[in-house]
Length: 125
Image 1: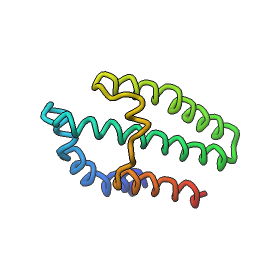
Image 2 (image 1 turned 135 degrees about the horizontal axis):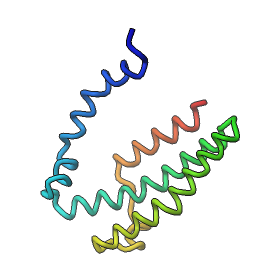
Image 3 (image 1 turned 90 degrees about the vertical axis):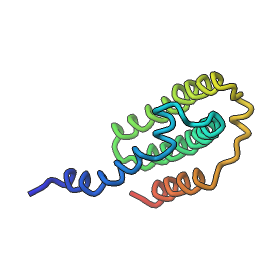
Image 4 (image 1 turned 180 degrees about the vertical axis):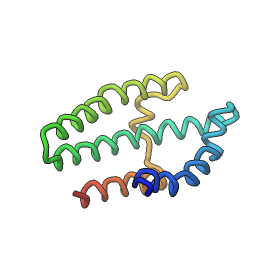
């Protein structure tokens, strides 16, 4: 009998294969992605990281075990104080300022994705 993980992998593999062929992914990989599109991706990723940090903070509060609270707290700290700094620094290499990042409006796609994460975090157990 297949394990639950194996069953999940079977369902997810076709999606994973499609994602690897997405023009954004292949364009980054082969260097053909226009700079404007990559810059927009970087800006949206900044907005995503902020929302992701909020989702992690919910996980901290919903954790029943101290070990889980500590793990999510570490992830939150690393996201806010390491990942964000690295992201801002990387964006500078592409002439994207911190003010530009802070002024980025969330795209509809980023909004839908982060709203889904927030909904699951708030309603899930």
